[in-house]
Each structure stands twice: as C-alpha cells, then as structure tokens.
Length: 313
Ligand SMILES: NC(=O)c1ccc[n+]([C@@H]2O[C@H](COP(=O)([O-])OP(=O)(O)OC[C@H]3O[C@@H](n4cnc5c(N)ncnc54)[C@H](O)[C@@H]3O)[C@@H](O)[C@H]2O)c1
Image 1 (tube, protein in one colour):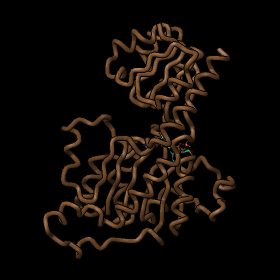
Image 2 (image 1 turned 30 degrees about the vertical axis):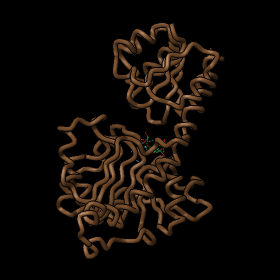
Image 3 (image 1 turned 135 degrees about the horizontal axis):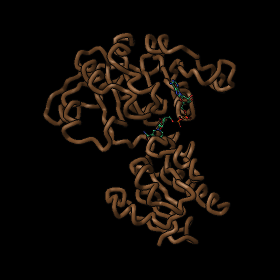
Image 4 (image 1 turned 90 degrees about the vertical axis):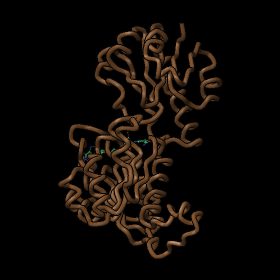
C-alpha cells in the first residue's frame, strides 16, 4: 500500500527525487477515478493534491492513516480543513510559490484587454485591415483596483506600478497602518469597496471564496463600476456572478474581462455556452498560477512540507 498518494499532476523530478525514500503512488489522472483513489489512500500517511481532488467526506473516511495533505497551490476550498483538524491531519498549502505566475497573468490580460488589438489575427489572415476599431488604450496612467490585498495582489501591485499604473486596493483585513501599504515603489492607496469599484479602470480579484466574497461582483455592483472597466478574476470561481458579467460585456457596460476560474470546474460545454459571442473576453482553464517555473516551486515546496510533517508524525 502506498505511503503517499498523488492523484493530480506535479513536477516529476520533485516526485522521484524529493520523495525517493517513500512508497509513492503518482497517477495524475487518479482524481478522475474516485473509487480507485479511495482504495489507494487506505493506508496512506500523505496525500498531495491540486484543486480538483475533493478532500472531504468519503475520501477522508477512506484515508484512516492520513497525517498530512500537501496542497499544490494555496486555495483550500477543495479541502475540509475543519474535518482534517479534528482528526489531527495537517494541511500544508504551497503559500507564495505561484504568486508570480498569477501576477504576470493579471498584468498580461489587463494589457490585452485595455489595448484590444491582439484578437485580430483571424481578421488579418482573412485579408481585412481593421485599424479603426482596434485603437485601444495604454495601461500607463490607468488605475488598478485590487480586491483583496494579500500575497498575489502585492506582487501584482509591484508590476502594475512599474508600468506607471496608480495602484489601489480594498482589504478590510489589512489594517491602515500595515507596512504593506508602503511599498518600495510607492504607496498603495487603501480604499473602501465602493470607492474602489467606482474608480478602477482595471479591477483584479484576489480574495478567497467565502460567504462574504461569493457573488461579490454581481449585477448591482457592476452597475456602480466605472463604465468601460476591465475585470480580471484569477482568484476563485463564485466571486463573480458569471451571467451578470456576460450581460455587462454584451451591453458594453464593462470594457472586457479575463476569467481563469469558474463556478463549475472543469466547465461543461453547456455551461460554457453562456460566454459565447462575448466581446473582449479571455477565458482560461484555471491556469493563471501554473507555469513551468511555478509548478517546480510549488511541487518542491509541497514535497518539503509533506516530508517535514511525516518526519514529525
Ligand atoms: N488562478 C490560479 O491559478 C490561482 C493561483 C493561486 C491562488 N489563487 C487564488 O487567489 C486568491 C488569492 O491568493 P493569495 O495567495 O494572494 O491569498 P492571501 O491569503 O495571501 O490573500 C487573500 C487576501 O484576501 C483578503 N480578504 C479575505 N476576505 C476578504 C473580503 N471579504 N474582502 C476583501 N478582502 C478579503 C485577505 O485579508 C487577504 O489579504 C485565492 O482565492 C487563491 O485561491 C488562484
């Protein structure tokens, strides 16, 4: 019986070199075979997951020897943390290891959406030359509004400031006297939610999904946002009311959106159809935090976390 089960993909050198002293079952598609997964974890002390494995109910029930859950990322909404705590199972996220990848995703999509010129490949190949309708905006001088001012938001702020954006953020849990508001590149302006939505040219979401943040960006909020603003969600599905966003894009109320995370993941074709024909929309399959570099950092940090917990267990 394996000692450590890994039912989703991770950096293979971290598996083979970092966990060489353990009996490891690494099957990146095991997450899609719940019965096999439940059987595999029966004697396991370690379980390493990304965000698809639901570490709760029946899986936890099956994993009676479990000591540590290593999370290849940071959001813990696929893990019943309370149930783990009650059983003395440590939950170890890879905090900070994919911040840069998400921050680069935000800056890239913000520039693409503001400029609007990069979706013209098909037109140009077809022989049209649509310069008139492709005159977009510079990012310099625009105002970035970060909703949530934690680890990823701060990396994003640094890059936005380097591009001459004005950087603001809303986060009631980061007090006004916290040093994070004063960065080497300058001050990040602390706003309340209403000020932020009314003034942001680019609004980027960096909050966990909680009862307070579910549907934070909904119809009435979008109506109070700056006309033509761009919304980026690289945080969690459920924070944005997807039908309301689609409506606002079609109506031209919002200037564009980039969504990396969704209410339903993976999203069925039926569900995805709601986005069809939306102008200036970028959809990506929960990949903002996943690059070769981040995968390596996240995997090695998780290996260290799991090894540490098993050594002390
Ligand atoms: N798309 C991806 O690939 C990807 C990758 C990594 C992280 N994420 C997600 O990005 C989000 C941010 O991650 P992080 O590492 O920066 O987290 P973090 O914990 O460092 O920061 C989250 C911040 O949100 C704030 N917050 C919580 N509730 C709030 C509320 N109601 N209103 C305003 N602020 C609130 C907290 O005070 C905290 O400062 C998480 O949802 C995480 O799951 C996505």
